[in-house]
Image (cartoon, rainbow, N blue to C red; front, side):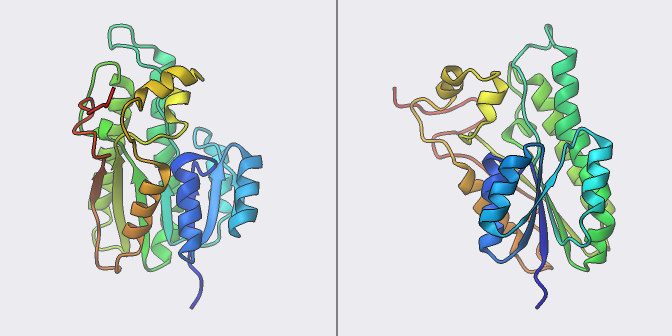
Length: 244
């Protein structure tokens, strides 16, 4: 049996890195994409994958990345992130545009670039990474909420548009996962980031990676449209039980 290829974007850390490891362990040939090529190359050497530079906010980078991949059966569109916590009244245009570029347009560019090859595989799949923020807006999260709502909408539209094609389309929506996410959102403020998970046990990247791998391992006639995954202590976007 020919080994199938999976592409994971944002694979240099967090959920993307864990997903690449899990898929490789499950027998996939994994192509890793991210900006931090040094990290990617180290990971690729470890798991037997291929590292390719990728900046999803740069159309030329995405085009070169997609052109370098001869065949693909699974795309995990994981690249994304949140920046800042300003209110709508004080919204920072640059933060909003940055979030839309990486989360929304980055996903669109990557899906668009690889979709013909996914269809040509005869059994392709797209998995997008959403968030509880795509389901429940919350104060201070408007820009990220809007971006992840857009990812949910484009994923649903893709599912509709792929009707009759050999393509499955799935969305994974994590709750609180302790990765570099909050450190990036708070511009490197580790103390502030730690408080997000204080007094509770959050998910870890491996929890989401295992879910993605399970979704990808279903028989080709089974489509897991969406999956919301939260830690036991988290009941909704901002309702969390903390032992303080």
